[in-house]
Amino acid sequence: MTEAMPTTTVEPTAKAKRRRGEQDLLEQSVRRQEERTGRATREVAECLAIGDTPSTQVQEDRRAATAAALADLEPGDELQSLLTAQLLTVHGMAMDCVRSARDTAREEPLRLAYLGHAGRLLSLFSRHVGRLERHRDWCEARVQEALLLLQRAEAAREQKEQLKMHNDFIVALAKKDAAAAPGDRNDDGPANDSDADEFAA
Image (cartoon, rainbow, N blue to C red; front, side, top):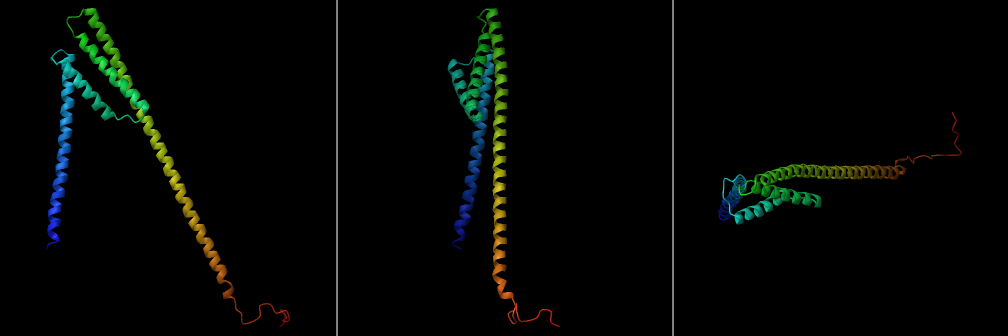
């Protein structure tokens, strides 16, 4: 009775901890999603001149968005790090051009120039995304190729070990048969009697 009591007490506690951990993880995910949505909403509103976001908030949003994007992308090598840095830089510059283009205090040709430059930067951004995805696919293919080679090497090693075990078994069996062969002979009569006539009737 006394041994069963702690078990029943521990199990609900472990389940409660697991549920609390899952709930915390879910709340964290929802909070991050809301933060991402809020940043994107403020940026779009600022670029479309339908909102009035303070410059400090814009900088804070950009800083948080950059950190979140780097955490989400998780560059796997140096080239991916460079492409990611270029990607984020080009995006920030494009958004700055869009903000400058919507400034009614500027002259129309200048605003159009900003819009044209924003379009070129967004096209460059799209190409960077494609290049990053292709490089990720290439890295994944290299990893899969290395895993396949490793699996083949492991299979060859196992096959070699099995073959060696089989050969060792055959050699041991042959030695056992050779050791048992002299005892199997019939020693009641002479094996080769030179005086006996082999052809005698």
